[in-house]
Image (cartoon, rainbow, N blue to C red; front, side, top):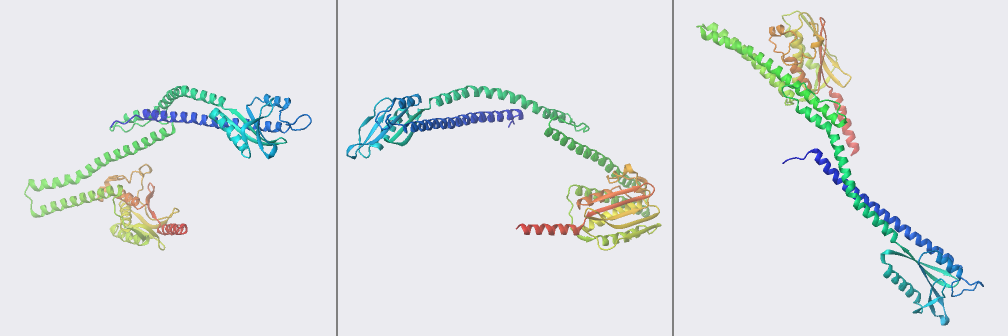
Length: 490
């Protein structure tokens, strides 16, 4: 299935939004216009009814006696209003009968035939409203008002036309129908141009990313791009390339180092086997050869095991038995091993730890880290002392520090000592059988426990390696506070 281009998809979506928005806006304008215009018509009719009602209050002849004829002055005022209207008057006649008169300006009151009796007023109102409704329908608004005066009860009917409203609404509708497609087309063109300009930086990033070949990962995507989101994307790609380049470099270095490290024992084994096969050897010579072969196989096996341990640690596949333990016990065990390691050398071993220091981690892995650091200190310290001490940090961490008075590490090499197979002094490492994996293993085991290893070194004066682990006490307090908060919330 072919996926649409982002530009096409954005334009298509924008078109739908534009059509819906413009159509909705036109409908909203027409609706608001209709409500406002209807309110204006009703208000105008109501105002006219108020004027007529006020004029009817003056309905009397010059002598002040109510008459059945509208005075000329009143009639003229009503006509000048220019608003169509009609007036009916309900009057009491002889024998307590009720008659409804139709009043017209300038004309005498004319009784409505066929209407008399008590129901005459309501019948007259119904008849007139039905007549208006039949003729005017929805084109007009009928405003009905009842009023009282000295002549009796009046019913005022004011007719307000909606013709102007309908004409204006029709004009708006026609204009919208004609202008809507034109507006949509122009907006679409502008949107297409804007979208293309907006997506140009993304196309540049895509082209530059395609140009980065796996054989040359040194190239990077140009930043900034002119748009923050795309610049963030380019920066993310660059960071990913940094990691890939670093991983590729580490893989190449690891492959080269591992092949070199494995080639050496294999070469020794091959040489021993050939030495045994080329000439007749006595039993002692064969046993010596087999012992050498066994030593190289054991060394190679340890190296492979170490590499597997590092690989599992870096991929978070190591099984850990995390629990609280006392670093003082681990320090005492390490001190005992250190004395055994320097039994034939003049090195002073000291251990400093006062009171319990509880850490959270894997006891066996922690012991392995400390022994690796201790082995490294013994290997590079010819004389002087090695000190092990318990330490506490300011960030709720505790740890063990291994300090030696050895040769020290150059400052520019401090970051490399944790790399696989790296040795500051390879001849000395060979002398003691090291493969350059001890510090790498220590670093990996520290990180999988949520800790870290810090190094401080001075050339000619020695080095200090500090293993930091989470403090168990602080974790317990945090967990307790969390449970209390949960209980309070519940």
